[in-house]
Each structure stands twice: as structure tokens, then as C-alpha cells.
Image 1: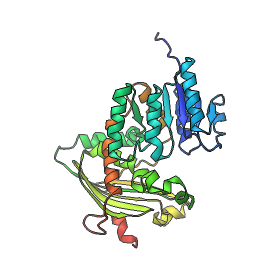
Image 2: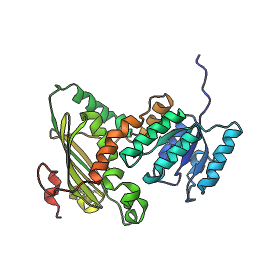
Image 3: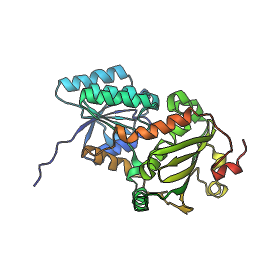
Length: 321
């Protein structure tokens, strides 16, 4: 009978954020423990549901000192989970690696391609690893689609329409998410998982054209090895199809492949836990896996939109600019 492994020790940065609960659940459901958490905001009662004995800090300096003290006392932190604002990911990943821990980072790992190169050097220097949560790669429907595309003739190109509208209120623009310097803008903050998924399924990028790029909307055309992709991202409630709004929903996602809908509206609840299991098995997604998606998002963020020219998303015809 195999020997039962000891629980791993986790620390979590950004525990008051929306996405943090999925990480707390994943740490718990994989049989591990949270020993320390950090957030400048103290609305963290969620800890009582998962790890009430976890130490909590609102100041990074005290958190840093505590993690170092634990290490010196023999309670080594094995992983640092990072759910902080996007622009802080790079610094928090470096903190984790300096403490001798592996980092598990929410999307996007970093905002700029050169940050990727620097972190790779940091990995080599410390001997520790940076893992990214790329949960769409673990979605059963997406896995099935990848298998179908892989089985197609090598020279076949698919026509894809990606639409993702996740409406946000006025608060969004007052938070760090509404600041392009901190979030990377809508294509990075909202789109990075989809760009990664598309590259994973259809291959490397060959063309990247941006049609519109606003604070609340972005759209463009990407050609990959095996796909021509028209994409549209929005946080504007008015962009949601009327029948979806009538039903009281504020989010709409659609992927059409050769005019066939790929249904993936469900199946998201345990993807973070699946991601953690793969990481704990040494099979998590690392720096090289996310590099191409970060490059695409960076290119989009720094592009000059061409307007409604060429092969643009059909939804743009219905919107006024």
C-alpha cells in the first residue's frame, strides 16, 4: 500500500478577491493546508469556511517576515498561490521563488513578454517553478474539441467565432481592473484564457489584426495554423443578446467552429481543483505554456485598431461606434 503523502503547506496572496475561493477550495480538496494569507482588505471571513487556523496579514512586510520565520522554524511553505491584481503577479511570483516555494498564479501570469523571459531566468536561478492556472485546457468539452481538431487533415483550417460578454458595473472602472496599466485591459484581463485555449487547440499565430479596442470592448481577427478566428470581448451589458438579457443573465459566451456551437456553459466548478491536482503531480502548466497567449494579448493592447475592415466579428455590424 503506497505511503500517504504529508499535506503541503500553502500561502495565498489576494485572499479577499473573487477568485481566491476557488484556490482555497482546491487547496482543501487536494488534502493540503493553508498556513498564511495576505490581502490589504480584511473582508476575509471566507477563511472560516476553509482554513480558520490560517494566519492572516494585511501588510506585505509582516506577511514576508512571517513566511521567513516559518521557514526558519521548519514549517516550509511549499506553494504560494497568487490571486493579486495582475500588475503585482510578477513581484509576488519572485517573492514565492525567493522563499523556496513554487508559485501558482492566476491569469495572466505577467503583462509583458519580457517579464516572461525574466521569470524563466529566475526559475533557473532558484530551482523552483511557476505554474499558471489555465483551466479551460482542463474543460471536458475543450479537450474533446482539441482531439477532434487534432484528428483533422493537417492542412485543414477551421472558421471560428469567439464571443465572450461578461457585463460589469460601474465599480469595475474604479477598481484596478479598469486601469490598463494594472490589468492589461480587456483583452488581457478577460481574454487571456480564451487566447491560450485557441492557441492550444489550433496552433501558433500567423496574423493578429485588431478591429476595435475600447475600455469596455475589443474585437479582432487572429489566424492560427489551423483556424481563422473572429473574436469579440465585452464587459458592456448592452452587448448581450436581447434574449439572454430577458432571461436575466449578464454573461454570454459562444464558440462557433465551422458554424457549429461548442457548448461549454457548464463544467467550470472544479477546474481549479483539477489544475491543483496536476500541479501537485508535477504536471502543471508552466511559463512556456502561457508565453504565446501573453504575446498575443500584448500585441492587441498595443495595436492601432483598423476599424470595420476585413474579416471582422459579425456582432460588430449590430453595434454603433
